Length: 101
Image 1 (cartoon, rainbow, N blue to C red):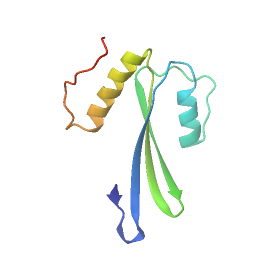
Image 2: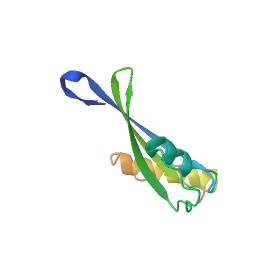
Image 3: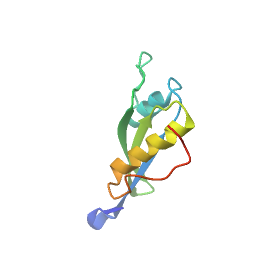
Image 4: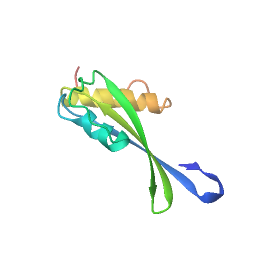
């Protein structure tokens, strides 16, 4: 959370959408964040990032949404770990995981 001066606080949240390709994650995020829809949208290759600023009961909220395409759960977990390491550089670069690549 980051302070926003005398008018209150700004709350920040991060969300990651994981899923198979061509299921509508990008369309959902674009509609929510920018109120746009493109029926000819091309497949997301790695990840995209969008933000949405909200006012919820007088509180400012910043929502950061990562839209990612993954093919299988083990890869999804590895991909999520890479994203988290980019967002929080202090995380260990090597983490033991039960998933094989």
